Length: 88
Image 1 (cartoon, helix red, strand yellow):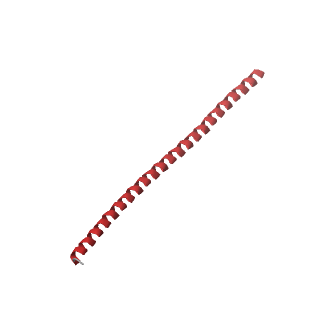
Image 2: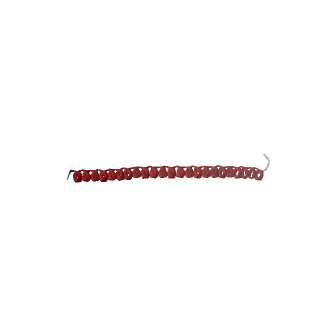
Image 3: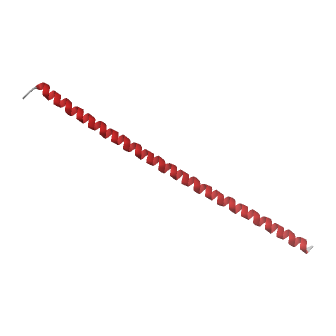
């Protein structure tokens, strides 16, 4: 009788220990998944910011080039107007 009780207690302890291990591993995997998700989100945000910065720089360079072309054309127009007016 005592052996049956002891055997049952040992079995229960073994089962509870196994359940505790499974629970611990489950919680650990949840933490790992959250960490991986956080890292993936951080990487995606960083990539998007880098893409935005590249796009902003491209647009800025294009704007500078367009302004330079406009200034050049304006200067040329002024030169031609001066030629049309003739000598002073």
